Amino acid sequence: MLQGAFHDGQSAQRHDVTVDREADALILRDGAGSLLARWPLTEVRRVDRPDGTRPGRLSLGRDDAARLLLEQAAYETVAAWCPTLTKRDISWNSHGRPFLLWTGAAVLSVTLLFAFIIPWMARVIALSLPSPWEAELGKASEDLLVRVVARIEHKSPEQMICAEGPGLEILQRLLRQMVAQPVLGLTQPPTLAVLDTDLVNALALPGGRMVLLRGLIDEAKHPNELLGVLAHEMGHLAKRHPTEMAVQTVGTSVLLSLLIGDATGGTGLTLMGESLINGAYSRDKERAADAVAVETLAAAGWDPRPFALFFDRLAKQQGGLEEHLSWISSHPLSEDRAAAIRAAQGPSGIAMTDLEWARVRTICKGQNSAN
Ligand SMILES: [Zn+2]
Image (cartoon, rainbow, N blue to C red; front, top):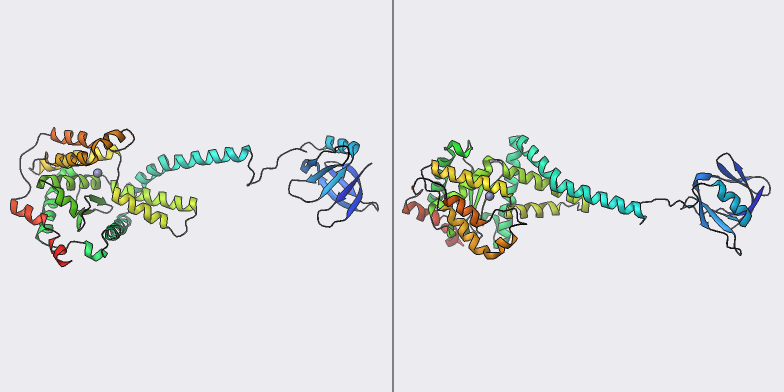
């Protein structure tokens, strides 16, 4: 029979105990023979070895406050019974190797999730999304976009939208004319909203919506250039690219909110607004939309080559920077896109008369004078 001392971890009292082994446990009894503790051998852990002046100390697991104190000889006997005396107990706040491995695996799986799984799922969902949902997503995206641009311009959302007028009617008629070309692949003309801002952009949104920013009309040097951009955006619509991107952004932001614990969903809105404005699609998607635009313009009887002017200007604005970044950027070089468009053989028609072009160019004029 082995002798030791026992602190139960709750009171300051020290008990002299006898230590027995019974099957797979240590049995601790006080001098009267009452059972004080029963410790399974696999859960006994070493706190300190005996060092000649002090007894060795054992505990039950790592977290329990109870201690069994044993002098050298008794300690050696008990240590031989306990197979996992020095085992590290892994807990969530441990900083040992298992935790690092876990972190590595988590980073890897999150990376896979964002880089491959979400984009793939977004495509699958976009292609099977019921049209009322897609329409809802489009409406929400457009409202958000108008609000984002209004904030940039320090105006109210209502002030942003250029009202109906002859210029808008001309554009809508030309959109219908392009949709009538089977090569475009759209069955219905998109809705078109023109926003009164100097920002130079045009965007396609889920549910057959297009938003044209006035700055792009101001910058355009030729009617066919503007129609090329609109045809390009319709090409994205025909291939459901905007729905895919919206689903991906929503999915990503929901996951980000979960990961960083953003309960208000502010991350989601910010991300959505940003992805709407930047509207960055993959290189392949941009090339596909360019090709559809060129074919649609040609099918409608218009010269597609002025569409290249848009990319000339883009290349000039971005200068050498774009070329420098092209290997990491997912966008095809503007110069390459312009060259591909110029190489197209097409008719020589101009989409608008001079008068029509003048009306389109003053589409937001009533807006400006009202301010
Ligand atoms: Zn595009």
